[in-house]
Amino acid sequence: QVQLKESGPGLVKPSETLSLTCTVSGASMRNYYWSWIRQPAGKGLEWIGRIHGSGNTNYKPSLQSRVSMSLDTSKNQFSLNLSSVTAADTAVYYCASFRYDGDSFYPDDHWGQGTLVTVSS
Amino acid sequence: DIVVTQSPDSLAVSLGERATINCKSSHSVLQTNNKNSLAWYQQKPGQPPKVLIYWASTRASGVPDRFSGSGSGTDFTLTISSLQAEDVALYYCQQYYSAPRAFGQGTKVEIK
Image (cartoon, rainbow over all chains, first blue to last red; front, side, top):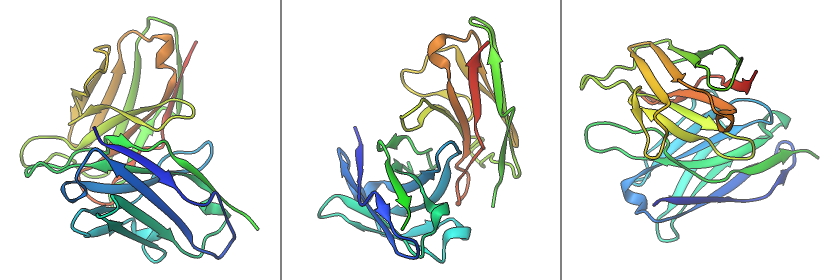
C-alpha cells in the first residue's frame, strides 16, 4: 500500500519560494506518477502538476513559469518548488500518486494527509 | 486544457433519499479502449479526497454499492441511491484523460 507524507515550512513570505517534500513508502518510485494538488481554505482542488519516476514532468500551464518538481529515488522523496509566492498560494498542499498500467492512466488514488502553507509576511 | 464543471454546487437530501451530482467535461474523456477517464472523489472535513469511482462507473475497493457512476464522453453522473449520514461530504469529479488533470468545483452534500 502506497503511503505519502508531506513536509515543509508552514509559513512562507511573499515573493519567496515555497518548498515541500513528499516522502513515499510502500512503492517503488520509478513505477508511479507523483502529483501535487492544492486546496485553498473552503475552496476546490487544483492540480499543480506531476512527475514520473523517470523524472518526466508535466505542470499546469497557468503555474508553469513558477513551478518545478524533482525526485530523489534514493530517499524515496519527491519535491515541489513554487517561486514568487503571493497570498493566493496559501492552501493545503497534497501529494498524491497514480499509475499507468501500460494501457491506461489511473486517477490519483493515494494521497498524503496534506500540509497547510500560509503565505504571509 | 479540459475544463470540468459540476452541478449543483450544493444539495440537501433527506436520509434514505437519492442524491444526484452531474459533471460535464469540455472535451470527451472517452479513450480508444472505450474507457472514460473520469473519477469521483469524496472529501470529508480535515481529510484528503478519496476515490469512490473511476472509469466513470467502477467502484473503488470498499466503496458501498449505494454509490454509482454513469455517463460517457462529456456527461457524467454520480448517484447515491440512499443517502446515509456518513455520506455528508464534498464530492469532486476529475478528468484524468489528459494533462493538466482537472477537478470540478465540488458539490457539497448535506442532510435535509
